[in-house]
Image (tube, rainbow, N blue to C red; front, side, top):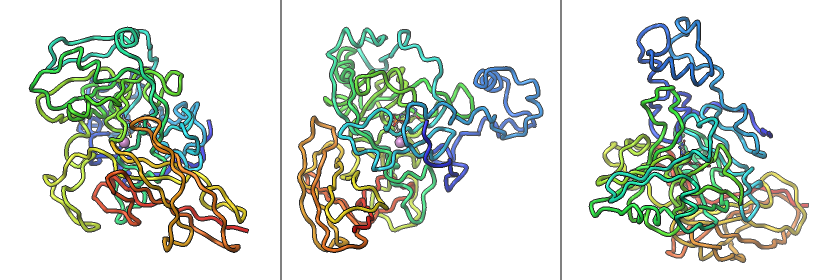
Length: 432
Ligand SMILES: Nc1nc2c(c(=O)[nH]1)N[C@H]1C(S)=C(S)[C@@H](COP(=O)(O)O)O[C@H]1N2
Ligand SMILES: [Mo]
């Protein structure tokens, strides 16, 4: 395990679990017990199960005390390489841009965004996925059933957290202070959600999906879910939403949802339920945890930095905006007078048509070589060579334009919860 940074407190410590939503319920079951002794009996049993033993002195535990054993940084980053830990409970870790240089993101460099406590002792052979709600034939499928009954497909798909880039908002937004690295494009193998839903028989009144996973709420309360989001049925029935059981040809990493997860390319990765156990089809928009209030929602209209926005004016984020990343050279490095420059670009449900870079603070731009996407939903790789005119400090800026003409802005379009930051990536280098 490599850890490049010490865990730091998020700006709003109470919201340490949130890249979405209010400081919310992470300690609610604890605080609301209304007495010394931290949990109701059911909660105590769960807490005991989670720490792996009964707690003889539980009555002495101060209200609000979080068992130290709940810090999850122990094994969570095992098998990960160079990720920056932003929060250890729940585990949130991002990847520095220069470690995202590969065309296909290695498992070891895929970011981790947990909202709760991942399941332990996962048995892939015993895992089942339930499809229910407004379907003709509810299904219960093992992973072997998924492999046997549906076409198995492999696709490179970009997952980006809706809060990626939040760390640059001013005034700041509470939640994980992601910089650039809550994005990845690995190669996922699984079956199309569409094929599975069609087998179950989507009824005509269905408008939305609801996704459920096996992770537990931070409070230990078994009646609470850390997150349950969904997508409009039309999105669920597109070709590149996968129920995935392999990542880069291997089993999923435990922190990336092993043994089964959704991959919803181009939409906030919060829709891509990890440790997937159930998909319910609904006749109304889903209202699970992190679907409502200000979670993964933005004002329906442009707002000024710091502006108060009434909650009823927030709308659910759907596709992620046009964006790019410079993965070489690394920010803050010394380079020669000639350098390769390269990275990736993506735009949810769209493709990138042009990638420009500037070495003179945006005064002039040059269009660089850009690959087509390997498949719908994959980020696109771009590269060029740059010769710098004289020794000194330069900033390399990258600016992507998508096939509908949307171009990355220089400055952040501010919103209260710090979502959708797609401002240009800038990399500072010293050339000599
Ligand atoms: N069951 C479950 N699924 C989840 C989450 C979670 O906390 N629990 N986090 C979501 C969020 S907010 C993001 S950004 C992605 C992150 O996927 P990753 O951790 O594999 O990078 O998973 C999503 N799926
Ligand atoms: Mo997220």
